Length: 101
Image 1 (tube, helix red, strand yellow):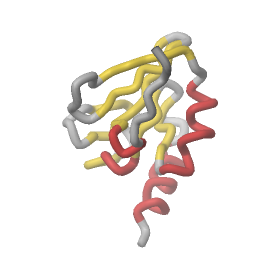
Image 2: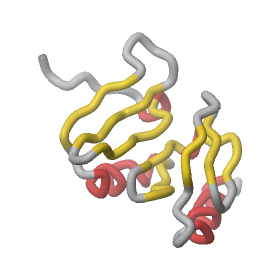
Image 3: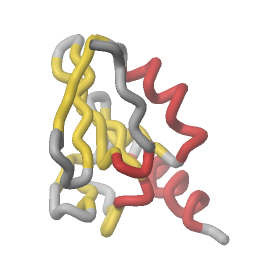
Image 4: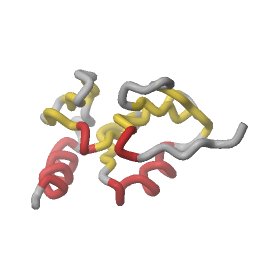
């Protein structure tokens, strides 16, 4: 079976688990799916669509961020993910810049 395209707005976040990219989607028939890909490759592809790398293992869709602090991000489905302490200022600035009208 071939890859099925999904709208980026349906992706909450992508998690790197070893060499697997695990896609977590808004509530749908298949909320999670995965395939082998480097998160750095996905980051380069998805940043122009409003995705933000918050830590070495997580790439989140800014459209679904409810709250972002220097320590964590809360998504629209109440998932809490850790934010890189080392890059927290850069992450907060990137999110603030994205939110500006």
